[in-house]
Image (cartoon, rainbow, N blue to C red; front, side, top):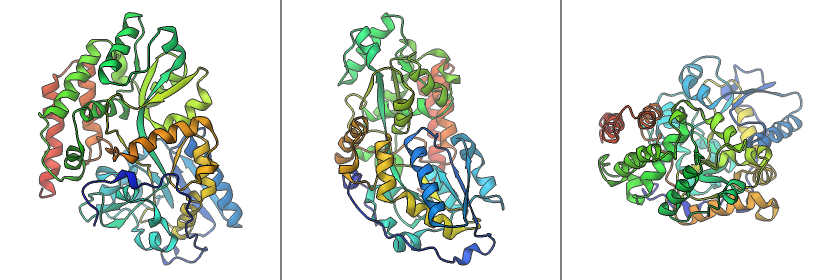
Length: 432
């Protein structure tokens, strides 16, 4: 049984390890497949750390499986999120795909019978050697709640949310890197006074709701996270955590920290605007790191959200094998390759956070900075997962909520009512 307190410090992010690589073999579930093609979907950009690592994994897979070709299809995060139920419930399902973790995502698909139970493979192939905190998002019970039950996915990297900042703009406007929330707001005030909007924000997708969650975490402790994410207690949406988050977020819009047009900005456009030097900061995840290394033409760095001991983050997205996959044994072999130290080292040196890398093999200075910051979070039990995980459809609820705060179409109190109802309804449906 998993304890309700997620002990993130036990994640062996950089521990040298070897997985048991199983030889290719027949799979009784593969009878409908031709055995010559592995259909793979993922939504990592080609310049991202994961995109670079998975491209190399594809090469190694084809080299070790003569006559087998990988049919890779790049999908968008939103595309997979919105169509997964329909596609996976058909004969068009891929053999392996990347999917978002958490109760409302992988947990929901597991309860709908759309994912293959990987428990036996996890034991045979050594996937269960990853740290307990990473296993939290791999395993789901019969109600789709993470942390216990069968294996339905394998995370192959870790991730967390941080503040990226443009060092050139900070120097130009004589702004210091903040270490407290008050200093953070003072820094943003300095930019506003200079006619510069401090934050690049994507309100049409996930980024803005992660800012809202960061603000809630300024008033939160581990028991709040366990209650909100794992249903270990009751959550008061009018309590200090979410009240502070909603009122402060709305205040940031009024003060000009967040642009009023950001409600319609997508995550991709948010990230590109930062790389173009249009904004001094962006609050988002480690999944951008490799792209910023490749695309930003200025000096930049990162810092953890000032003053917080808890941060959005977890094991990375999951490799899942659809129940209707036609070549499951090939899918299992591909997962093995992505977990090899060689691929994990490449991921780490390309700007990602590996889960099974050799510390001595991480030689890139920027990558060491990224991984060191993650170690600070994980070693203090600081991973707080993501705000959209607790309930099916909650992602869209939170997107709408932050858009109301940006547009000023609803008060913070009304937005809290709006996000509380589906959360409470979901608990009622689970008998909580």
